[in-house]
Image (cartoon, rainbow, N blue to C red; front, side, top):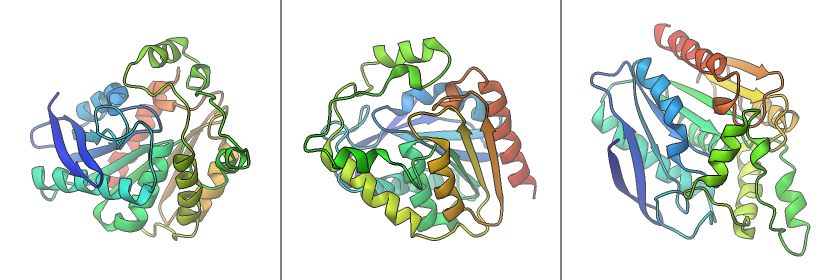
Amino acid sequence: MPEHVLTGTHGPLTVREWPRDRPRYTALLVHGYGEHIGRYEELAGVLGAHGAAVLGPDHRGHGKSSGERVLIEDFEDVVTDVHAVADLVRSSHPGVPLVMVGHSMGGLIAARFAQRHGDELAALVLSGPVIGAWELPGALLALDEVPDTPISPASLSRDPGVGAAYTADPLVWHGPVKRPTVEAFARTLKTVSQGGGLGPLPLLWLHGDDDRLVPLAGSRIGIEEIKGERFTERIYAGARHEVFHETNKAQVFADVTDFVDDVLTR
């Protein structure tokens, strides 16, 4: 797959592309904390088969991009980085509708992007988004020292192969979370909560009801704060955090492509 290197707010960003000639739409994928865009290969394939040219960056401090690992001091800078990728998408495919898909921390980034640049998007998909009442940052910041507790691979999916691949992936961060990143999470949760609704932008919310990393109830509060006039939700019984890697992923993919079809045909 082609890779691009863009100038980010804090150094070079690696952007992966799954190209397609004359796409019906473009999809910009926004990955989650500690991971990288290469974990979205299957989703990119589904969207490509559906007619999309797909791109996504490794955020600063993640994957193949520059920066101290998992250190994000201001998510507004990450939104600016993602906007540079959106500019690249638009210059490659002028006039083609752009759909953004954000997962987990990427859902926080994508929601904030939509508040800042929503008129540039045709639709927004949020999967297990870190928005609303996410209690983890407050709990961690109340401690004198942020504990070294990595993400449990079993919390990602009911498919044990997903956790095993995650554990073995050298581009995934397996070390401790960093206090400045936790502080940035706490600030941006507040910013998005107060940042206003998305108006006419079509929004699809995907969430597993057994998501222990980003519990459903907390995200629902955030969704209620930002959703606009065209809102769809899909809650999956028994699914954990990564619905694109879950045992019912075929249904999840179908829900995404059906949503995009509905947006593009209106």
